[in-house]
Length: 365
Length: 261
Image 1 (cartoon, each protein chain N blue to C red):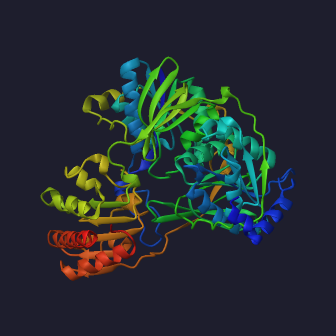
Image 2 (cartoon, helix red, strand yellow):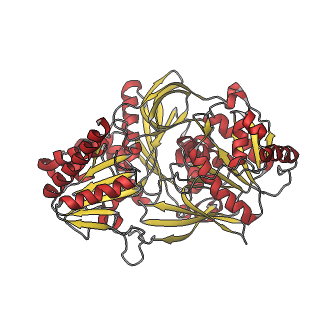
Image 3 (cartoon, rainbow over the protein chains, first blue to last red):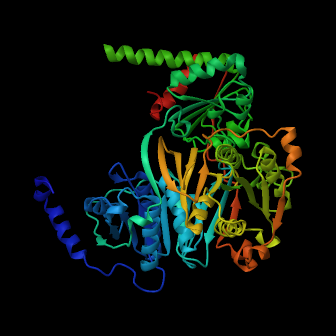
């Protein structure tokens, strides 16, 4: 605690409240499955954004259910456990076993399985990170319970104490609601960006409970020898994607590339554009290609087939450039430039370059 | 070297249509195809067999029509096919699918390697691989783009967000294959002809020693309670023709959202 914190009487009071809360007994030791667990993943030494998003919803469900929201933290510092309380955990189950540092998959699976069997949560939630996509189904299989991936919304059926999980499939065209009945815990993975991150409330009270797990070196099956940044294009994580379709054609493809450059984005193509030889197959967007989720997606000369939508419907802002006002992409788009791309694109590229030029001139002035 | 590759039959999503009234997927008129990423897994298996020898068994669970997806894999070069097909399997969730596939793999006999695509284009949970590894108590390496095997160990390049990880793991292992792996070959006429003569076995639940009550709709712990087509949330703001004022207005809208640098 810094000196300025010590001078703050409110914080000093909160600290005494917190220490009074630090008593055992919030862990479930009964036979019935109770409480909502959130697997807390660390990224770059902090609680991951996806975990914080899940806390927001878990808190709401916990309050409706009259259940405690409990975080499971593997490794890290005690200050991170306290952060989890600030994000909404009533209890943090903290296992600081040295083998759990960095949460290797098979060890995290074993440890989480053991903790669930001991403390019986009724709901176990994961934020949609790369690790959790492997970990969550493994834990569910280990416990012999059901698993629902890619949740975009969670609702509570409080009469039945069941979680109603909305999934989005076929690029958002179809939503299914599923429940895990007759088995506990109900395990779900929440897609990133589905909820707002929970607020950090430093005055929230909660308990950090150190828990033990049994792990040995012999449990390690896979080792990471090396980790390096991926070479080449990473469409899936690109912030801006400009995608051309069959309607662009080879003769006009340079316009798509120029637009991508003017916007500072990556070039991509539909299945049709790849087949026409406009762009490499590694840049194909669609159910049968890469799934992108950029902040800005621009679709040029493409109608937006279901296959294509499956690869890009997760984009935050969508701009369509097309002659056909009634194309399916227009129905998804926030903005549209309606017209022949041979006229519209040069005009837009020029306008973007002029804007950029003005900003640079202003910056050097 | 014994390799098992899981191949799922999925609707051809480049030809998927939605019922305009109900919004539900029309599956009947959609011809089934082998899940694209599973074909990447077949290609990876063929590469390993070329180097180290051995046999490739392709395994699927589904209706009789799923034989078509298996034939595709046989035509690419796999040695034999096994289809688990049983009316009681209809409505299986991901957990019971993994359970049936694990039993099928055990009945085929101890493989060195189990390969499958990372995700299917229809359900897209990406959960079968991880669940299978857990049920079989073997290593899991997901989203692999390059794989080498050597004396009971595998060395894999794994796609991990914006990183590539080099992972060493003990075999047997479940490896799920990324689209960044070598692209699958097209089956040629010779391959298709040969495929017709390769062994294709169909097994039922009873053959695997499984009870119908534990699988399919009866055994599914995950139940879909509602299917809906979401309302269109966006309302498009459109400008006609190539006019500079429109472009400038669009730029301002995008800049306000922090999308232009």
